[in-house]
Amino acid sequence: MIAGLAVFLVAACAVLWLFSRLAVLLLERRFAPIGSVLDFPFGRVHVVDRAAARPDAPCIVLVHGAAGNLRDLLHALSGHLAGRFRIIVIDRPGHGFSTRRDPVWSEPRRQAEALDAVLTRLGVDRAIIVGQSWGGAFAAAFALRYPRRIQGLVFVSPATHPWPSGINWHTRLGAQPVVGRIFAELAAMPIGLALIPCALRSIFEPNAVPPNYRARIGAALVLRPRTFVANCRDIADFYGHITEMGAHYHRIDAPTEIVTGDEDAIVAPAIHAFALARDIPGARLTVLPGVGHMPHWWAPEAVVEAIERVVIRSQRKAASRPVAAE
Image (cartoon, rainbow, N blue to C red; front, top):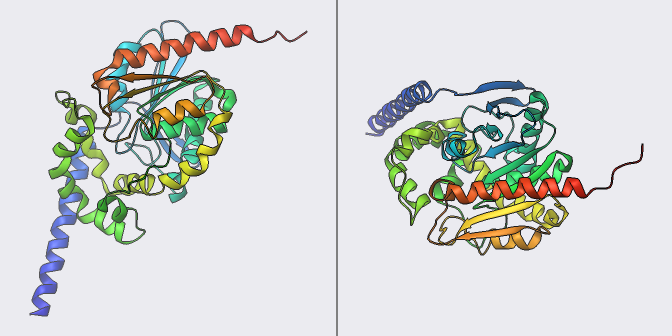
């Protein structure tokens, strides 16, 4: 009986592993990279770089949140920004088609190194960073580590401060060094595919999930084993990273806009957006009534207006600086 049970378990694991492998192949064929994949010593970074109509136009960098990829912000905002700005969108290390070779890259300040390398490769000196959710912590980390590269900041539903509740069981499990990888290889894909519709509804509530959103952004890409583990580690390690980083937000002196929905049930505005507006000198907070965690989809005009205000504020700031004597 024990031998029979062992055979059954081995067979079940083999079936789950084969299912996950096939699903990964199909997902990566359907949602292949749509930009350039740049090689660096720390890994590869998937980047979309769209030129502006004018060569001197400001550069806007869009950074996605947890469990996402560059298609999310690109599809939501690029139509509103195209032509007027140079648009750079990246897959954060470990997500989409960007890689990470070391678990320490769950830290926002380490991930900021990837953007610094990308901007250097693309010849961009300064940019306005737009970070959504977990990407908000990324934007703050970049501003703290590379202040001279920052023209301005726009935080969209940012996750930036410690919160009182914990994380879900599958995230804790996926973040474990050995057990997490086994879970990711065998169970994350079939369980995740079944739960994606419910997860998307919870992310967008009280707003509806946009038509074809799952297919447009390749939501299931996060269920690939390596990406699933990276995402779980990002979330599991997040509390400690932002607790330490939050003590330095007052050092950010770039023009800053914060946009949040008043019904965000994923990242509580009172804990994150309101606190960030308090901590960053001169930050402007916009609260959108009836909007949840994804204002870039349901109120993209408000996000674009925040970007435009940052451009104006940064230009005024540059004009007010004293001219150095020759």
